[in-house]
Length: 412
Image (cartoon, rainbow, N blue to C red; front, top):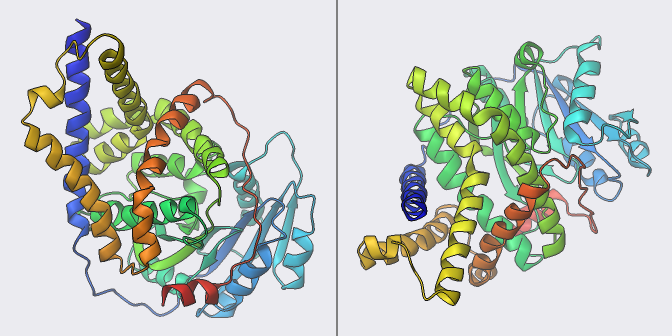
C-alpha cells in the first residue's frame, strides 16, 4: 500500500513539473508594442520601513526623479516601530513620515493595513496605491508604466522585480538568477497566456477603489501571496508590467538568506492552508485555468516539502536497506527521459539569463553554486513546516547604500 502511494506521489510531482515547464515556454516570446497613455492617474506611494536609516535616503531621492508629474503623486513612509532616525530623513526630503508604534502587531502586512485606513481618511484621495520596500529603487518610468496599465483596465499590477546587488556574493547572484528566471519564464508566460500573475511584495500597484472594496486583510508573513490569492478568488487577475522595474536589495549571507526564506515558507504554509481547497474547488466549478494555476502555486510549499521527504526516503532506503525497495520513476520511465528533464531544467535558467540580456560572466559562473541555493530550500521548508505558526517578522539588515545610477551603471 505504501509503495503504491510513493509511486502516485512521484507521478503527481512529475506531472506538476511538466505543467510548470510547459508554461515557462510561453515566456520566450515578448511583445514589443505597449499602449501609452497620457498621465491621468494619481498615486499614493507607500513605503514600509522599520529602522531603514541606512538605505531610505537613496529611495527618497530616487522617488523625486520619476518622469511623472510631481503634483500627481505623493510619498508616505510608514515608519513602523522605528527606533532610529528614519522619520527625520524622510521629512528632510519633503515626503510624509507616518510613525506607527504597535509592538503587538509587527510586520509589513499590519503596517500597510494601518496606513491604508489613514490614507482613506485624508482630504486628498488618490486613484491608485503603489507599495515599495524601503531598500528598493525604481526605474524613472515606474509610475508612467503603472498609469499605462491602469488606463488600460488593470486593477492590480506587479512590476518587474530586479536585483539591486547581484554581484555582492554568491547568494545575491543566486537571487538574481532566480528573479530573472521568474520574471521571464513565470510572470511573462502567464501574461502571454492571459492568466493571473503573482504579486512579489514590492513594486505593486493597486487601484484604490479595489483596495477599499476588498480591504487589505493581508497580514500573514507573505502578504503578497495572500492578496494575490484573494484577488484571483474574487475574479481580479493581477497583471505583470515587464518595463516597470523595481530593484530589490538581497541579503548577502546564507544565514540572512535562510532567515528570510524561512519567513516566506512559514507564510506560504499559512496561505496554502487557508486558500488552496476553496480556490481549487472554485476553479473546477468555473473551469477557470487562472484560478487553478493560482491554487496550484499556493501549494508550492507542500510540493517542495513532499519532494524533499520523498528524496530523503529514497536516499535512506538505498543507503541502509539496499534499495530502492519500491518502484521509482527512474525505473519506470526510460533513462533518457529522466536525464533529459534534468538537462532541460538547467537549460531553462540559462535561457532566462540570455533572454533577459544578462552578460556578466560572474553571473554565469554563479550557476556552479546555484544548485546549492536551490537545494537549500528543502531543509528550510522542512523546518518551516514545524514552525509555521510563527508570526514574527524577521528584518533584513542593510550595510551599504546603492543608488539608481550604480545599478544602471553595472547593467550597461
